[in-house]
Image 1 (cartoon, rainbow, N blue to C red):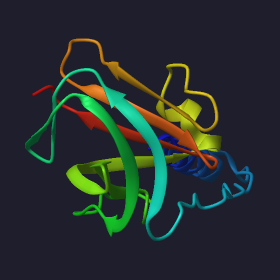
Image 2: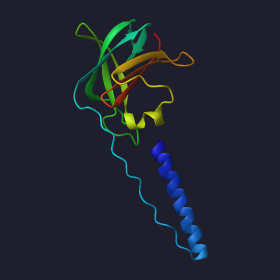
Image 3: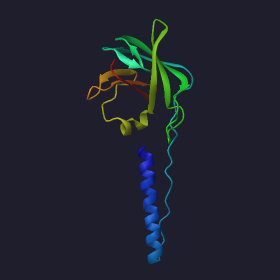
Image 4: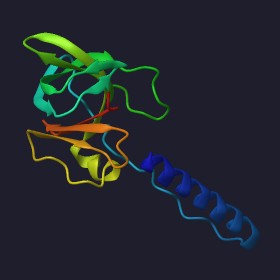
Length: 158
């Protein structure tokens, strides 16, 4: 989203400079396109980390009781795709206990290089997670930091 705003701002500036150049006889400087690596996410199913939920939450509309769950990233992409989003960065995760899926929810995958543009809070250390109630009490955020990516899951209280 931030890149889109920067690109829109650059485009507006370039158009304005071009209009100014036409009226004054000056030529506008050539804009260099921003080149950024396309964020990547692991493919297929990946076991992330265990998390402990201190209170019951809703996952995909169903109650997920308090407890410790192993979180597994699935290969299934969330849909519909959001405009401007990199494919594969919105997927489903499963909350598992004793090998059984107890609930599932959409996860947003944010590469390490972009996390400071998305979240202002202090992230968990590498290969760690944190679970916290967000301000206002509307959502519990499960935040997992593993393998160079951050996995953000937002669950409403049950």
